[in-house]
Amino acid sequence: MEYLTEKAVLSRLSTKWAGRNCQVLQVTDSTNIQCRRLAEEGQPEGTLVLAESQKAGKGRRGRTWVSPPGAGIWMSILLRPDCPADKASMLTLVAALAVERGIRKAEGLATKIKWPNDLVLNGKKICGILTEMKTAGIRAGYVVVGIGINANLTEFSEDLKDKATSLLLESGKEANRPEIVAAVMEAMEEYYEAFLQEQNLSAMVEEYNQKLVSLNRRVRVLDPAGGYEGQCLGITSTGELRVKKDDRSVVSVVSGEVSVRGVYGYV
Ligand code: BTN
Image (cartoon, rainbow, N blue to C red):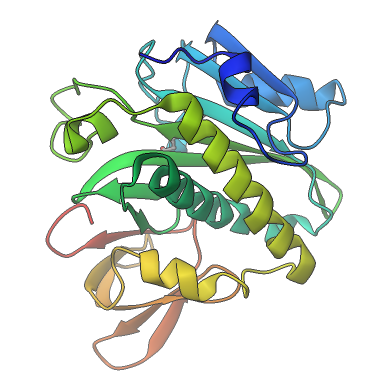
């Protein structure tokens, strides 16, 4: 097994800034929390925190993220985007593209994106993304993008077993974690710069939609104000998901407000 060390990551890195300032910890509460501490200390954009295990790994919607030692990639990158706060949620989609490309480059595995923040392989989740922001007035301030990749996990709890998997379980071969981290950083730098230039996702919409697991499929939108079903038409250049309802009207679903499921299960 290739250990996750600063040297292992830095020796593979070919970025200008992403991941150059890199901290690898044996254990932390949550790499997102640690990354926020470094942000408050004034550490630069691109600062990367990795941990072999997390005692209080955070998932979305207040859930915990199980983060056992040695097998996963638990990492957070610090961004300081010069953009309004309401555009920062697009960074979750930017990160999903970066992880997809990183895994493809490092492992030769083609994952799919489950809008807005999961990656799936053979219909099961292999990565989750948690983006957190500290605003500065109406500006974004800093953003911490937390990425959890089930690289070499071999066991999942009873409640996760049916919907989660790992790169190792799906490919039968151990994933090279430093290689993946470096490839994700490279892709992140590229997509993020394209995002900043336009302040939207226009440069990557097409690519995103090609990777979207639910494209053209029937999805169920779980909206607290009333759920509905429809056909998934892909994302807009601002990251909303377009869904064509059965009455033929098209709605743009905003991430964070609702969740979208396949009609036949998780994807
Ligand atoms: C989700 O799918 O609910 C998002 C999971 C995000 C998990 C990652 S692991 C690294 C980073 N640190 C955390 O505490 N959470 C994210």
